[in-house]
Length: 282
Image (cartoon, rainbow, N blue to C red; front, side, top):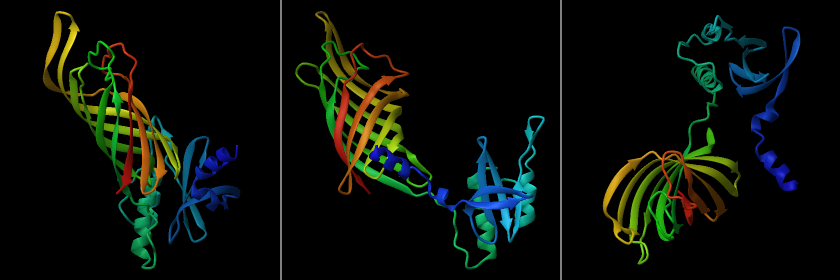
């Protein structure tokens, strides 16, 4: 239970502690601060809808985007323009766009102002791995396990998209005396991290695109052989599970790949495709 409480506390965003009550049209409203300066952007949510306010001095004005006959009226653009004097035609009714617009105004009008817009901060991790695979998306009469090894480069935005990453994997599957099959693969993967903390990350791995080179000499029946080589570009949308455990300047990484694929037919064998490795923070 203590671990669960700690995990929940880690997931609480920092702005939760900067809330404040304001009086607007005689009504007390709890608002959160997104940008503070000559113009302050305040916001809250009600019934799943976001509400935004501009504060200048003691004056608080709501930014509205009402809907009439199925069309949003975008009144907030005129309000924002009246406060900033800047072109607001391309400002979207999102916190990110409103933060950027107000942050720009504050920087233009206050030499001492420090920008509060959070930039994208890309981080990369480089890893190597090895494991075993029965590669269930090609003929494998005896369900033979083959060794595999490879490397990956993972790209992460650790500010705005903490639970998402893109990974490029290169892997080599090697044949043996029982199963003369080998494959070289280059794949693009998307990962959603449903558990993320400083010490542990668990994620769903989705293989979006894959370039596969195969070389084989396989006996399917006593008088039938599949032999030759070739390459193919695939969009498998294959799903797997992975985990990273913090250790030193990186992570011990485990990945169970290709549990099932939406766009590939398997050979009927239960997929066994796992690797263990280590990745470094670059």
